[in-house]
Length: 137
Image (cartoon, rainbow, N blue to C red; front, top):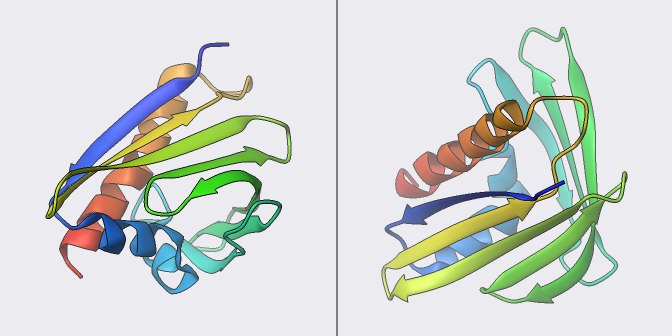
């Protein structure tokens, strides 16, 4: 299946964007696709072989799930590659456009349960939430 690509340009320096994307104290503020959800827990061992673990839950407690990825490659402030528990791969690029602008691009293998467009919209909503958080912090 063809990977899905989404991106967002953020008017902040690459180091801030990198930190806000990877530090657990920031991840919990943006890692959800809709305001009716939240991310009550995040752990991130940002090294090859390390794991990203997050929890997403509906705020009303009706549903939730754990997410886990294992890092395959990390180039600080530039690139992250990891694989999920089901083997799907994710790549995140941090491109410094200029000293105050960063483009974040996520390329991920879709899963087979949900329509491609639904997956694109969900990941894009999370990236939009990240953009909003970085811009307001």
